Image 1: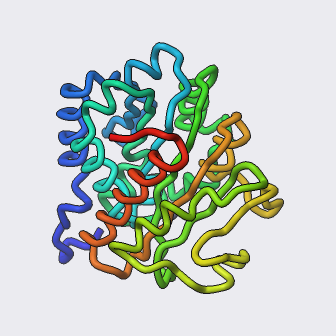
Image 2: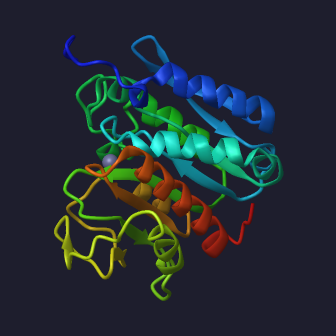
Image 3: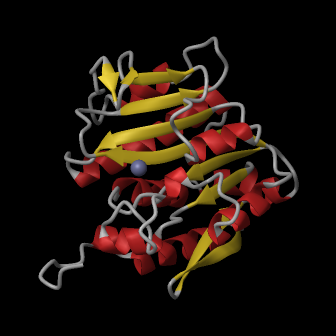
Length: 254
Ligand SMILES: [Zn+2]
């Protein structure tokens, strides 16, 4: 990182994790260390209901370090929902890429794109992630991301062939940010910001959402906000997407 660039608070991993420690105390979350990135611990959190074996909602942010809104949106959402976290089954992955967040890079401290590696069990972090998830039932997976090229919000939906799962959540998000209305997004056919994956693309290996689906999670969504828009607006759109997906897909209301 250039010494000339001030370290923006959005890239302050210590502050992010201090926030999570406070949420964990209030919500009775169990912290599990998956590994280290240089000297920094990589943590996931689990609610008591998930630890007791109830099917859990999996929420993940911070896989790509240059996508600042999702980690802060997930923290804000958790801070506002500690009683829900006490009551329902959740697994929360706040930031698997601490050095990427600090340095504002997509890749991790080894120069790897983690979101192409969730299937690689020789990777110590992925091995620990897979071991943690093994035997846990998931009801819904939300992987929160951002896209530099996006013209609005969009979502990859991986789930049952029938259904219009993301429409209510995308409508809710429009209060904060428009949808990306391009017909083709990242080379995939999109309809009003929704990319439905009926089959797992043969040319893509190892995204978190796809591996979660392969692990038996019936619906996994990868939500993307446009990273050229204002940070606070993106944070609010991400929070709204979490709330609306929980309500309309998982049937969980705050
Ligand atoms: Zn991303």
